[in-house]
Amino acid sequence: MSLPALEDIPTPIDGVVRIETSPREKATPIIMEMMRSVYPHDQVFGEYCTVNDYVACPPDELYEYLADTRSLEEWTYSLRGFTPTDEPGLWLAYDRLGSETEIYTRTIANAAARTVDYHCAWDQGKHLWMIYLMRVVDAQVVLDKPGSVVLWTNCHHPFYDHNPYPETAPEQRPVWVGDFWDMFGAGHALELQNLKAIAEYRHRNGLPVTPKWMR
Image (cartoon, rainbow, N blue to C red):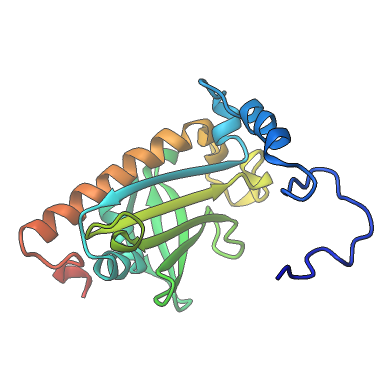
């Protein structure tokens, strides 16, 4: 039995490809045209930057670790010195990519879905527009083996192209966070390797994935 899909739309919508209007013989050339042996960097990492990896560590333990903002002190390349601010849940640290630039972070996590979203911004903590979206998936479900799969995506917010709050920036700072956008794919892959190595080491050696200093 077919469901009344799209019955409220009287004419076909351009760009919607379904078997009812595009049988396999017609759809296959469309799909083949979309496939490339080499993809331009901007096509892969221009508007959205996504990195993924497998981590040999139980998903709930990895989620608990990531859900604590202070974990960024360990596995990120350059965020250091996390301290709580007067505003509950908001942390202040320094991004050494920006010559000791202040970075503010608030972590929004959902244990049921194992999502961890880091809402961040350089220089000021009122508008946290840099959003790092992470999800920890049970590898037993998706790869049929123990462990975790980490999915991590950033979106190219317009503010990466220009500093919306120049009055909050330190004088003489030569860079803006958006200057590094083209390197986000490689940089985040490096940081994900850090996360993988740290979590796997602790789990393999019988250590809590979330260390005592974070408890």
